[in-house]
Length: 578
Image (cartoon, rainbow, N blue to C red; front, top):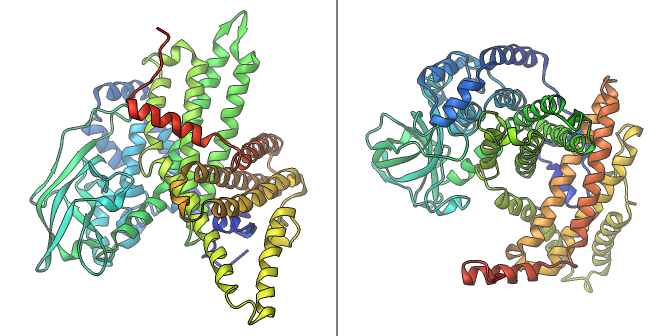
């Protein structure tokens, strides 16, 4: 296995290079962590089982009872990622993600309350905290005496984190903080806030701070009336001349943007785990409903269209679980550059859950639409996942533009190297030959082990061919799009979305292949069905990838934008049959 932990699988893939050692073998939990996790899961299921009516009641009321929060504290749900020496369970990324998955099988509001605390609320302390900060806050956070919240979003700054207006000004040995944060998960129950504020100085434009509720000038707004996750606490959090000691700076002064992005990247597997848990619950609900519901003389489970829905739900759940587990494994193995992979896991997992929840409701028919049953609540709860912690639209731009940046650098290096080509023709010829050979490799598949898998079971040969074809399409697409649009690529969001979707599909396929390959090696009794999942999913990826690649030059993008401009200018729909 490679020892280079700076490699990014997807950034390499965009250059036509398959770094198979990064994703093979499929990651697994260590024995000690697995034992602790299994015990914890048993406790969670024993505690939450049978509480469906309470969850529905709290959803309607829009509030989680204080006594239930206390039970969460006692079960250790706020201690999951805190080191054992400070009173926590010390879970790494994979175990933590699996724990959130289990909670999400029961209720989204409970999962997001625990998840927001660990995934983002206090993760900055884990990643950037000083020893003194950790000694001071870890024990209280582990016990749930302090619940954490992440304060980045503002009324005028959502995905554009750089435009925040909350400001901190240095005053002696302290900072004075003023501003307001919006839609803060756990806002009404938190007493530990990771807050991002604008700071002027040569070090940078934004700094992260630890703010506690007992500081004068900290206040929370009323509970937000939300579409979903209604029992979880979401409020505004305001800061009025809050004096923060210099010891509460999190990370370096002026490096707050880096802190925020690192927190979000590191914590995405928690959200991904929650999505997988909800998807598994949807399959359970839909399967039972399909077997019990009789129409035209037989259970609807016997009808092909119902089987098609449930079959696709199974495929997408397996793919999402594989992807989230693989990213967790990259984090736990110490890979440094996994931002693109983490963003892909968030986009893919949240969109798979949305489709799965919708299909589960469809299988349930009229029951699915009734509040008496959990289907409609799962649909409502799952919708925000595509919005918070980075909207999927913005993350697609990040995924694609990161690839474009790498390809652009390669093209720039080629261009600058040609400056003296006639003065040093041998050097120039070598550069051109290297570049041409790389592009030829991408176009033909001929070019060495880096452009193909070498360590997969022969049973995965068909999927490997699809992946390798997709890799060549991806590399050529990145090159083609960049050459076509140049510096204007920033504004060509249809093109970048297509590239991002190819990248998302390929990484998901790589994760599924890795997992199935490990099952083959382990001689898993479920391998036959896992190979069926791989066959279906790889076929879907091939069709989608070819479609996206084909639309780079042949598309209706300008027509779509023209119609949008018409609606925007009229602020509505322009036609009527009257």
